[in-house]
Length: 140
Image 1 (cartoon, rainbow, N blue to C red):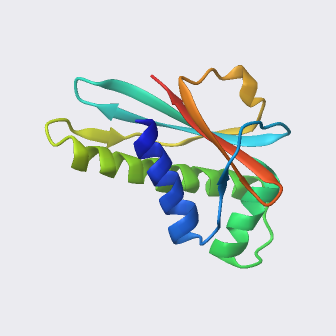
Image 2 (cartoon, helix red, strand yellow; image 1 turned 60 degrees about the horizontal axis):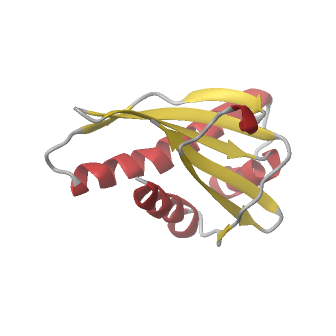
């Protein structure tokens, strides 16, 4: 699962947004969060969590929307769309790799400003872009 997640993250940031991200270890600060499940028949549910600082979300917004002023509700929509794009692509990769199991994508949930340390993940990946760090992971 982690290999597919890594590829999906790279696809979104490197290929779609054209942002060069690098693997990182530590992460701290204030983050906006979103969660979204992938449900696999006979596999159970994987809950994915995405944590982004506002500064990094602003960089994504600048690429996708070009200078629009954001209100608090807009951050909600943006991070849920990131969840749909990244985890939705991972779901497609899973369906291609495991033809005997059908995976379905759930509805993303906005978690708002969140202390990510309170969510225990089975596995996660941490990245940085310039001075912004973000984490995406899952628990089963």
